[in-house]
Amino acid sequence: MADKAEVKNMLDDVLNRYREKMESDHKIVEKLKDFERKVSIKFQDDGNYHFTISDGVVGDIKEGALSKSDITINTDTETMKALIDGDMRIMEAYARKRVRVDASFLDMLKLKEMF
Image 1 (cartoon, one colour):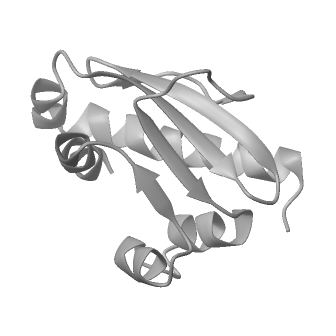
Image 2 (spheres, one colour; image 1 turned 45 degrees about the vertical axis):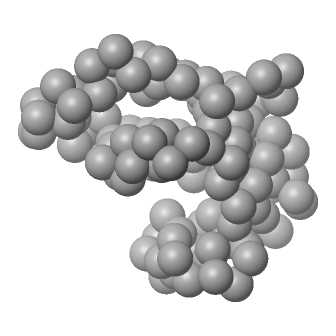
């Protein structure tokens, strides 16, 4: 299991990769215009983190739970690391019940476009 600093660095890395992608592909920004969501990540073995998405801009990762989020990702740190490193694909994690995403179908499609 990763410690809290490693988990936060891992999540920051994902969001920084997204920000780099945004700079090179402005079509994504246009597709996410008016997209406002609060995202929670709940780790079974570490704790809770959250961030916001507003008009294609992703806010910084913050520690702690939100009282209400639009999108909630439930997993463990090992699975998240495997997903980030490309050692596991999201559909495999989902099929093996190692990740659960609570979001509307349209939000899922938007998230897929982002990452």
